[in-house]
Structures are given as C-alpha cells and as structure tokens.
Amino acid sequence: MKIGLTGGIGCGKSTVVQFFVQAGWRTVETDALVRDCLASDAVVHAALSEHWGKAVFHVDGTVDRKAVAARVFTDAQELAWLEDLLHPLVRQGWERAIEVAPEANWLVEIPLLFEKRLETEFNLIVCVTSPLDVVERRMVHRGYTRDEIAQRRLNQIPLEEKVRRADRVISNAGSLEFLKQQTKRLIAQTHTH
Image (tube, rainbow, N blue to C red):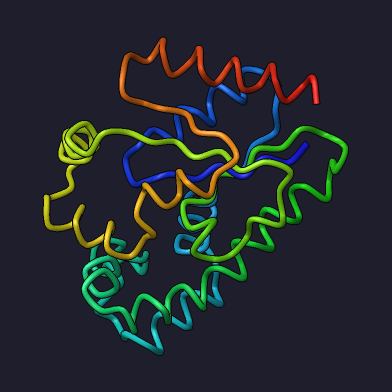
C-alpha cells in the first residue's frame, strides 16, 4: 500500500506521519528531502551559487534557507526555478526509498502532491486539514510572520480544493488525541483493503 499525504501549510502533516511510523509504516517526508538537498547536495549548491551567488549562503558555506525563502516566496519565476532544480531530486529520493522495500506499507508526505500531479503514484491520497486560525497560531509559534504564511499559501492549491481531490481527509481541528484516533482509524481501514 502506498499512501500520498498532503495538506495545507501548518495543518499537522508531520504529526500524522509520526502516527503512521508508530503503526509500523515506512515513511518519507519530502520536506526533509528538500532540507537534505539544500544542506549537502553539491549539485544543488553549485546551481544556487551560479543562480544567486553568495547571497543565499552563510559565511560557513551552508545554505541560508531564510534567504532562499525570501527570494522564492515573493517571485513566482524564482520559485519555479528552485522547484525545477529540487523536485526531480526529491522524487528520486522517495522513489528510491520505496524501491528498497516495495512490498511494505509506505506513507509519502508531499505538500505539493496535487500541484506536481503525483496522484497516480499512490493507491490512496490523504489530505490533512486544519482551520485557518489554528494554522496561523501554529505557524506564528514556529517563527513565521503572517506575511510569510500568506506567501506560502499563495503558492499552493487552496486547501478546499485539496480536500475535494483527496480520497480521505483527516481533520486536525481538535486535540492531538482526536487527530491520533482519526489516523488510527484510517490505518485500520487500509489494512482491510
């Protein structure tokens, strides 16, 4: 079984991933793959350096992710350039992971699953949703400004549309326990199919 997990920014996708891990599923978080590419991929570093120069690097040579974000979330062309660079590498990352144990149950968390038209890669698409005010509180708590949250939202298909296209929806509107119960129920249902 291969499940694609998506949802809006700050909706609790990572928490849902952890519940799947606890249930014995193998998981891939594409945000972590992106972080790895930015942290240690020499090809990515060379491309960033050629495209933006030293402006997106710290003095120690590591990528300044805030500087990159400032460029891409205010400029659609820059975002498209970065996505063209990273997304093929990220896709290779999760495909390779699955190849190691194709018979296992896999959950792949992909925030831009619909945007990148990856629906056909999975047996089931699950969308995590959360009310706007709850998301905003979470994101502000994580250090994002309201402007940064709004900019990131603009680059994604609206959450209502993701909910409409998904096979299953998990609502993260209540307690952590409520989120866990919904996730456990979903996992139980997938074992019966």
